[in-house]
Amino acid sequence: MVVEEYNEIARHYRIKETVGSGGFAKVKRAVHLPTGETVAIKIMDKVALGADLPRVKTEIEAMKNLHHHHICRLYQVVETSRKIFMVLEYCSGGELFDYIVQRDRLSEIESRAFFRQIVSAVTYMHYLGYAHRDLKPENLLIDDEQNLKLIDFGLCAKPKGGMSDQLYTCCGSPAYAAPELIAGKSYMGNEADLWSMGVLLYALLNGFLPFDDDNIGMLYRKIKSGKYDTPDWLSSESLILLKQLLQVDPKRRITVDELLNHVWITKEMGVPVEWNSKYQTSVLDDDVVTEMSVHRKVSRETMKAELEKWNYDYLTAAYFLLLKKKTSGRPVRLQMTL
Ligand SMILES: [NH3+]CCCOc1cc(-c2cn[nH]c2)ccc1C(=O)Nc1ccccc1
Image (cartoon, rainbow, N blue to C red; front, side):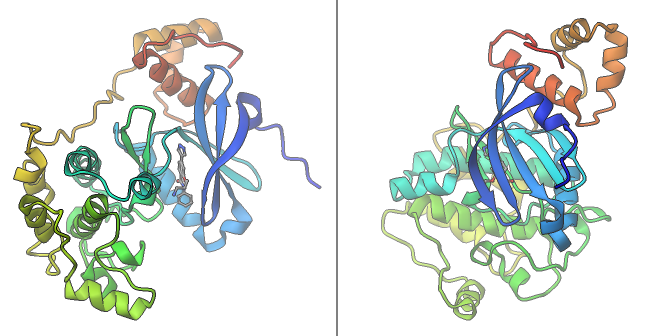
């Protein structure tokens, strides 16, 4: 058997247990040896990927442009003759899906806290011209500070002509798919995302789905009807917001701009959702540059020039992980050779 060259993954990471898998990928927890930080590594076999290979390229290109505190961060990409490795931000709390199931349903207050984070991530994506197109609780992970991190950008679309471009490919998970999407009509990615957010909010507040059926035909009929149960624990404000999100006619559906300071969204919070990224990627952090240049025995200018290529190689990973250590108040130190 062909022995894979001793690649960047084996050189810089100690791979641990599997933390999840989806379709064509296996995700393992790992330790980044130079910093000691924990990461998640999404491992894909190029042959097994087959026709899905473009989805991986789509996800990698999208994640290189999406820098937001509620979007799972990409640190490094390693491609060998047979595999693609994506080194990602680690979320110790697992999927929002399991979090809801374990609690039956969430209170309105907890649902609001989580939903505001989802609105923040999706608004940021839409402003950058991306639509996610597969929003669901399985694709929202919880980190060690109860923050949600959006994952799985394999289906996200960045239409050439910006958000006004119609999308055609039917995708995502049926139960979260907008009526216009399953009708096979042309649809707007951002409008379809708003519908999926309505399904998500319903799942948070109720612990089950608004439209569900084992028979796909029945499921589609329920989605197109736009009719769903309204359990008596739902507040009138929750019902109003759900009605505005789960509008069958996409032109009557609420927009992200109206969502940011919606009365339900701001209730007891007082402030609208802040959708701008907290990350300052354009300016390199001086302490991190210093530590890396000293460690590599190169000048700061040389190290800055290298880092500003954003190659998503071992330097990009070391930079982001050292920065994460700094923002978490841990020493900005590299432990071993880069
Ligand atoms: N439903 C999620 C299963 C686990 O998947 C992930 C976990 C992490 C993760 C776990 N801890 N920290 C980050 C990061 C990324 C993924 C992911 O992208 N999964 C995936 C998406 C589409 C197709 C196949 C796999």
